[in-house]
Structure formats: structure tokens, C-alpha cells
Amino acid sequence: MVVYNAMETVVNRMFEEFQKTYEMSCDCQICREDVLAIALNKLPPRYTSSDKGLLFVKGEYISPQLQSDIMRELLAAATVVAQNRHHV
Ligand SMILES: [Zn+2]
Image 1 (cartoon, rainbow, N blue to C red):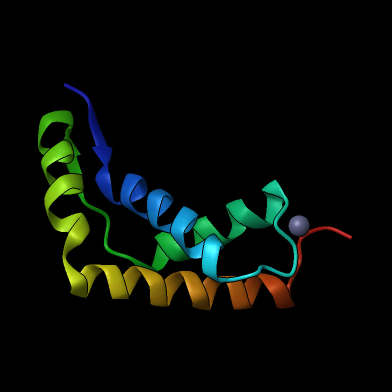
Image 2: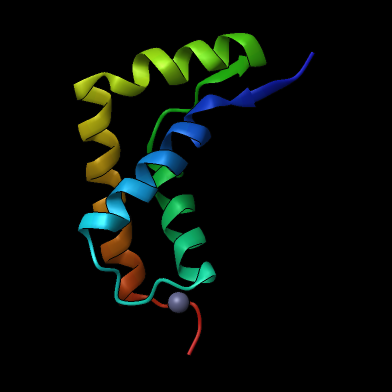
């Protein structure tokens, strides 16, 4: 059985949307991964088997409450990363 955190998939997709409207001070891979890691640490994980994960991504992905929670955490994470860059 394959178990994974469906929240990762959702947040990854939302992050692509987020980057269309928010200009990150640096959008290299290190900073993008930092933002994702920080946001994912703040959001509740949704461990699930692969079939149910697909349902979660399709269903709850469009929940306005979850969507705004994720956007809020992405914005907060992007702000933190902009102020604490892990590279020169
Ligand atoms: Zn960077």
C-alpha cells in the first residue's frame, strides 16, 4: 500500500497559482522549496492511500476555506523566505 501526504500535491498546485500573482524576491529552486516546506509544516497533513488521495485533491482542493488557508500560509512562508534567504 502506498501512503502519501495528499496535502503536498494540493499545496504544490496552489503554489504554482500563487506565483502567478505574487512576485517572489527570489524564485530559485532553493527559495521555492523553502516556501513549500514552511507552508507544509503549518498545514495539516492529509495522509492517505493513493486512491483516496486523488479524491481529496479533486474534492477538497476546491474547498474555499482550505484554498484560503493554503494561500495565507504560502504568503506567510514567502515573506519569511524573502527575509531569510538560505543562499547569497
Ligand atoms: Zn533563491
